[in-house]
Amino acid sequence: MGWTREENRRFEDALAVHGPDDPNRWQHVADAVGGKSVEEVKMHYEILKEDVIRIERDQIPLPRYRGASINGRQIDNEQRRMRNLTLR
Image (cartoon, rainbow, N blue to C red):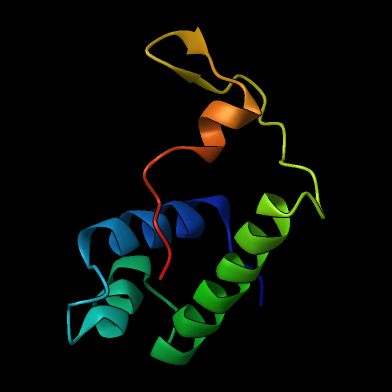
């Protein structure tokens, strides 16, 4: 089953809170998302990592989000790319 926008938001928020040094990271992320197993969140993370790698290699374009802004300012794809999500 797919992931909703809200589940993705909770997933990304949980990744930011529960870093790679957290021994229970995947359980915490699954709990934060709700309705997903530990295996499902791990698989979703692996897909996210592959997507980021492909975007960084310019193999797929960055998505354009309607109305994407920070503090009322429009942001472009390069600014979005450089935000704080670090994947290990």
